[in-house]
Length: 101
Image 1 (cartoon, rainbow, N blue to C red):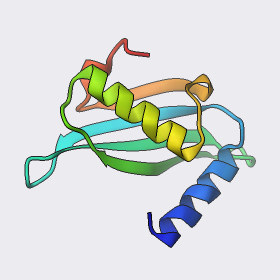
Image 2 (cartoon, one colour):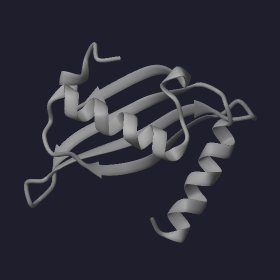
Image 3 (cartoon, rainbow, N blue to C red):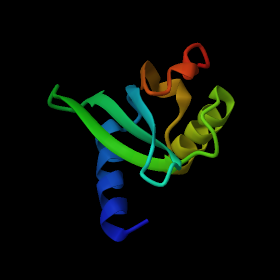
Image 4 (cartoon, rainbow, N blue to C red):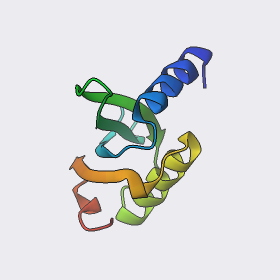
């Protein structure tokens, strides 16, 4: 991860703290037909503003619910967040995730 990406992610995590957030997940194929999953978080900051921030774009081997779920779990764990903080979910292009969490 680049230095600037780490600084940005650290800032996002500081804003969230231990509070709750919603997941916004988009799954799509890139121009080389590789499946990619973009993960964003929606949360309320200390000033009461609703923010949406991209926290990762990861390659997925397949688009099954099992694969997407395990990839998402790993991403959240890697950045220090927990599913216990998730209060909402939105899947666009990853509709097979419905009911997985």
